[in-house]
Image (cartoon, rainbow, N blue to C red; front, side):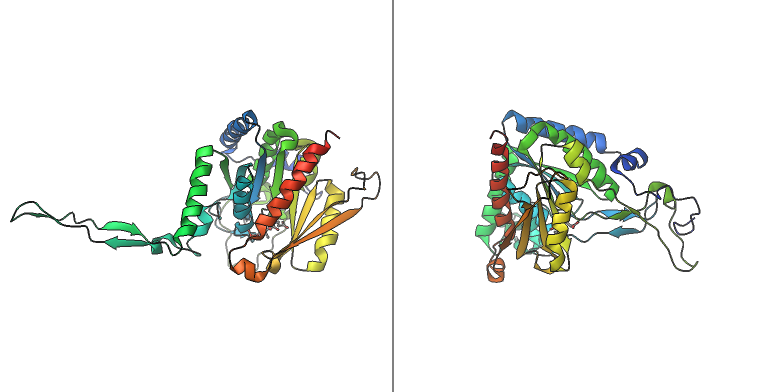
Length: 353
Ligand code: PAZ
């Protein structure tokens, strides 16, 4: 039976709340192991008093079948998340990098198959032949591999940052593919980070689907063609910012992203999100300009910050980089992370004032 032909009554005429979602949709089988690893990483960071940021990155999929052949995907290469993770590491944070499997990752992103294929840096050279006596020549036959990067200085600096992070043990990766895996992981990891109180930051750059097919509405087998058009009715993915702020990690410094294709919507939608969920910052970005400009929207310092108590005022800060500078290697994430590190610090200090 296809999803379109499923005649079972909709279980979700009311949109899913986070609570009803987690009560009805199954956790991924790897969740417990993932949580154990995150817990051990977090306790190591707590022991040395390091701040931790959860970076989410890449797009989520929405499978259409239980034996999945087809799925809907969300746009995102994972560039924002992978790049930002490097700057957070440089700023002294430990990073939990929760990313879509096979999307870009910190450090290796510089040598992805499309931007800088690593094999193109490698050359095969004949091994020297060794003559043991007049008649015998040992031909080692295996050519030597030599590395010729186009920009050796760049490779050296990426490699040394990567090795330093490996040695310090400050980067921990967790992967998701589906929106369901993402939601379960987000809740579980946020609860683990709760231990850090204000020392935890959440940088939610993943492109998460707004709609999904609940398990009970999914076809078990591949949806068959030949019966006309496919009509799908999808449910709304529950909003996670509200329970994050209210329950999972009330002390965390939470930064969400808002992607639009119409720039004029960025600020009003970011304000609405802050008003509705009560977190700290929304970073707005327009699809085609996202590498050159973003807008930080937050509650203005004059407002009480208590949602529903008074009408909050908002302030906007635009960060921009020159397109020429970008072509020369400047990354807007460097400025985004500098700004957030400053804001996070003053927010931590504000608890004592
Ligand atoms: O991964 P990428 O660099 O190609 O894109 C980053 C982004 C545009 C997905 C991110 O900056 C973002 O806006 N994430 C939130 C998307 C949203 O749900 O509105």
